[in-house]
Every structure is written in structure tokens, then in C-alpha cells.
Length: 219
Figure 1 (tube, helix red, strand yellow):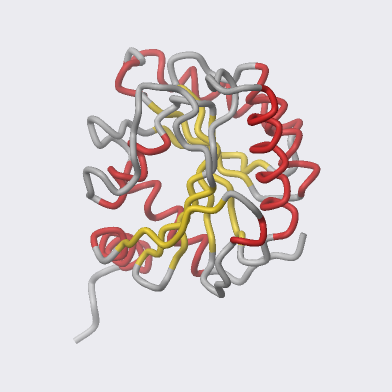
Figure 2 (cartoon, rainbow, N blue to C red):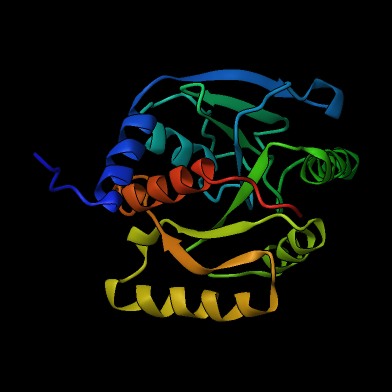
């Protein structure tokens, strides 16, 4: 008997199973020398401080405290690696923007992140989180320019979309998508999620699964 499930359905089911399975903290690194050796496809999650990185990682993996969420901007001060079922590495990058830390510390984080972006062979994609309530801000645009220079494929995701009025959500996505035409590393489509209300999580899981399952493109 032939299956009635389409390839898209099967991929979606596989993505749901992957993110519902084992996910373990692997390592927190403060220098490039500490990056773990790995052949797993790697997807990094980045964004302004307090944009919801930790909350999204916890929502995607169905765990309340896998990534530490904080109301204090700049809590994540290291690059943190999570092993997702020995099939995918999720990476939590330190947030940029209004982190409450000395300039010397922020410069060290920036240098570490650039080293990661430029030298990490397994890196397939950076998921750049944008606060859906505000859209692209100046430091988001400068981050997109950095990702362009590094040649890292970038997927934009609007967070906290439940706090944007339903009639404004499509317009906000269109505004952000229009700005991406100037950024060759960015994918044209823009996703929108809410970690709290679990909006858009399955679509994002399928996107990440699809990226991880395809051969890496040369930069």
C-alpha cells in the first residue's frame, strides 16, 4: 500500500520528532579554541539582547530551562552549543545591542562571534531574530551587513508576533522582507513566531530541518 503522506508532510513529521527528542547542553565557550569538534550541521540563533533567543530555543525543544532566559539584557555571554539528537547542533550566540556590560566585554563578544561566523565549518544557517513589535532597527541592519560580509546564509524570524495586532502582522513581515533585497546572504522569506503562544514553531522547525538535511553550500 502506498503512503498517502506527501514529502512535505513526512518532512514536517520528521522535524517535529527531531525537536521532541533528545537535546543536550554540550558546551559554553568563551574562545574559538573551545569550540567543540563536530561534523553535525549547525544552526546558530542570534538577535538583539532580550529579543527572545532563549525562550525560542526552549519552545522549539519543548524544554522549560534548556536555555536560560533572563530579563537582564546581555545574560548570554558565551557561545552555547546544544546537541539535538546527534543530528543537528543548535548554537545560542550572545545578543547584541543594549547589553549591560562594559565596552571591553562587548568588544570581546563581537570578536568571538566574528571568529565563529568566519571559521566554523559546520555552520549552515544563522537564524536572526527580530522583535516583531519594532521591525528592523539600526543594529539589526548592521548585523545583516556583517552576515553578508561573512557569506553566512541568514533566515529572519520575527519574534513576539502575538504582541503585534493580527491586522498588522502581514504588513510587518512585508516591510522586513522588502529590506532584505539589499542583503544577499538573507533568505527572501520572513518567518514569524511566538514562543509564548507557540505560533509558527512548526514552520520554523521544518525550515531548520530542511536546512540541516541539505548539503552545505560553499561560501
